[in-house]
Length: 169
Image 1 (cartoon, rainbow, N blue to C red):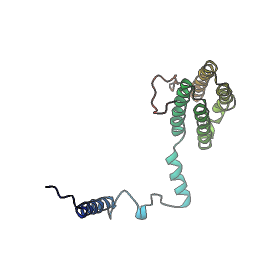
Image 2 (cartoon, one colour):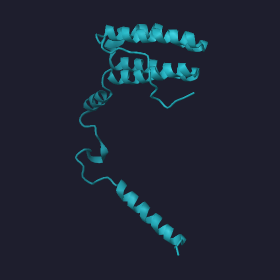
Image 3 (tube, rainbow, N blue to C red):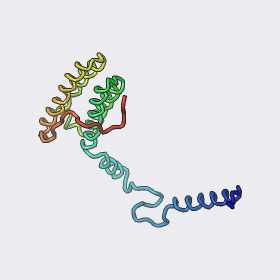
């Protein structure tokens, strides 16, 4: 016969909680973490420099831009115009923040930000797939043009062929 007493379950639950809490304890001595969990050392200027390095140059900006570019495309495929608008805004913002960190890239990005993005916004507002994909083709060409101006023509942007994101309309 099974023993289904509530006190047995409570005892087992209590033991499980205690073991879980012990497993979450951090080791008292760690070579990876500075005292009190601080990873920034040095003067204020050295700390700022360390944080700047974490953001890296334009690489993280391009990673996010690539993600937003793909999501923009699939939003257009789904005719999810609100999501397309959101992705375009995020894409532009990523580039703008990247330019704060790497202002030497600003000249190449100006056409993209001042012409391509507004044209894409207008296409999204029309909620017309044909217009959207014509402008998306121009957006892709603008990306590749910018890469060429930055002497990185090997970064060839192409229309996505496989959906990576779980977002669906």
